[in-house]
Length: 326
Image (cartoon, rainbow, N blue to C red):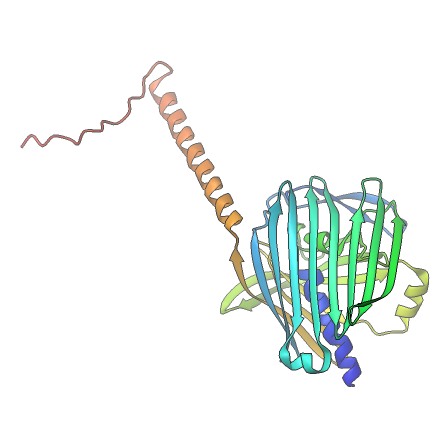
């Protein structure tokens, strides 16, 4: 039983990392890959604009706090950058210490990952994975495993695919960026570094989620991940998969509010604790505000000119205070 609990503590932290670090792109077109390998346009909601800053999450297993995660979203030149930190709590560390760090750079036009780096430490074993995505569809992975600081395995993998494939960081963008409605289903591919998967997302229903005392309406998204390796599919058929639900806020922010996963061992729950905007976000908001103010003033002047005629001169208000004639 203890061994199974260790296994699913890793599953939960991985869930935080994979699903929560999302929403980094401008409006664009993504693609949906069907089982036969065909691709077709998948429209992204043009009104979705991700905010820059850091999301904080906590993870519970059967109502016991087992881990935390923070996901920072920012810009680096013309690219978006996401950084993820996740770890088990001190109590869990005594039996199964886990530390995770992820970092990714992604292009925004069109939607495409550039590079992903993942570092995971479980007890004394460390694994570093770097994934490079090339324009010709080639995906190269370099993986290094070490124990107690000594390298035990070094592996290089190359994947050539015609299917539209994203890394976990950019793939989870679609959880937030799509225009969800109850009954909507989206399908695309994900490559985390070793195997290629088909990810199917279905909007099951609407729900209300309590985040720090605030009631927020959310879409309930049901994910289904399928390994495209026939041998792995056969192995998966012998196991009972966990039932998972992702709650995405039904507003312009499209925040990942909560993740619930149920298995024979119990219930896992990942909840958003807070969001802290970055300095760049504040600058963007100020710039947008100034742009809207300028646009508003321009509209007002245009209306005045239209009302007074094309030759009417608009005089600036006097700087002198009005005289009191009394």
